[in-house]
Length: 634
Image (cartoon, rainbow, N blue to C red; front, side):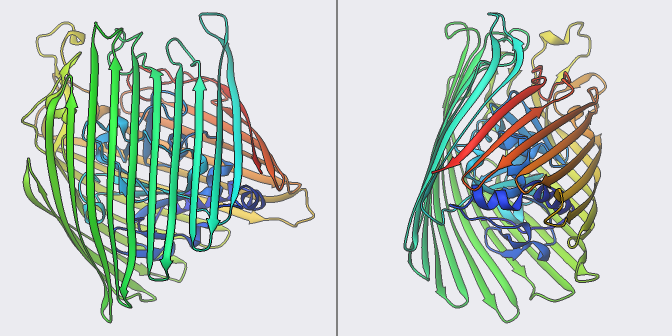
């Protein structure tokens, strides 16, 4: 399941596409499928459409764009998207919370090839994925309440990561090493390395691929060392032109020092290991010329082992199992396209601090998409949900688009969604946090209007949105009559309402120069996102909020890239962030790359200004870091 592409982020995507060398992409990706942005067909659960036909706010980050960025993890890629708030607790995807338009990490739904990575324990673990950047074909970032498309937990949006499908047999080996050139307490340089390999076997209509990788580092400050293993397998089997079977399975073992993650400063020597296994099998069958049916089953297991100082002092051990099944259908008729689906999910957790709990969820969905017209299109539908804790709820949604010219579109959409409390919200009783079993689900209403131009050398877009969340869940401390707030536990509560108003602007320019010139291409892009939150209901005058006041108010990104002498490319990117409760800061990253037909070499420099900043909790992020890497096709 992918999504329908739209709006303001397309400009950002356009520039990032410029940042990648077209010739380099062909070389590096010759054994895998590669597509341009305007060729991406975004598929929702049931409906599909090309980028230019979509009436929703979606960013597409293509493989070519990722290749050009000075990044080494998925979370770092997402940090370049205005409107997406990436709050990392360390490099290389150790742990990261992903929010969209001021929402919390539990309000964003993560998907891998359309499989929902809902983690009922905590949203902290949703980016613990078995894939590396080399596995990614493109990333789809959907903004706005999206129950109509994805069901529950897509309160503020969804991020679908689509992996590459093998097109020919081959092997690619990659590796990198880096350092901050600063010394640790043992007078050794802080450093890190990564090694990986991706192989593909293609025969007839069948394809299989396997990738493995290891990322290891001794950290960048005290107790921040990490060791990460990943393995990911996927296959496509085509019995005939009417039936295709897809299989994927992956495992990740992510261990790291958790200094300052949850209970600073007492957790100076804490450690955490998160292991995740994921598997899914799906089938796409054309029953007749008008009916396509897609069943899928999936399973996800996560073991989260957190040690505060040492096991006999304090330890949280969580084992979570999630089993899902869905059946989606698409019907093409003379009056438009209809989508219908049913899905079920069972969740179980056994935990030393949360207890032994289970719950189940059933969802029914239906959509109608009007016949494609040169000027006007619309989609409407709804999602009916039953949860064993909270009963039945209905979430409608609709979108509409009008083409002012073939290249200029005006669009609007409205949607609703729900986010279920996690088991941590409900049951946690431990160091610094006390759960609340009486929590209800969050509910959101969302509306947006925007305009975009997606063609030619110059592109632009802009959109304005309003979101209202009722029963908003936030962790708070009531400080009334208390002299030391540090001695009070955090407790989640439902607030009456949380409103968010925001807008996004993007503009980009790209050009291809003469082949015989020194510079072969040039691109520049700038994006700005503004958020203004407000709250009604319970007063916050005597309370400290954990998430409400951590919203990014201002977020600005700028990128510039050029290719020269057909083999060299240079890119630079800047991010400016200002949170409501934190100082503003600017980060500048850069990449220089040299590419040939069977290999490429690059050098990255991140946080060039050596800025000291925090994205989550009390975790200081790395300062200046230099990485050198290479990939080889065998």
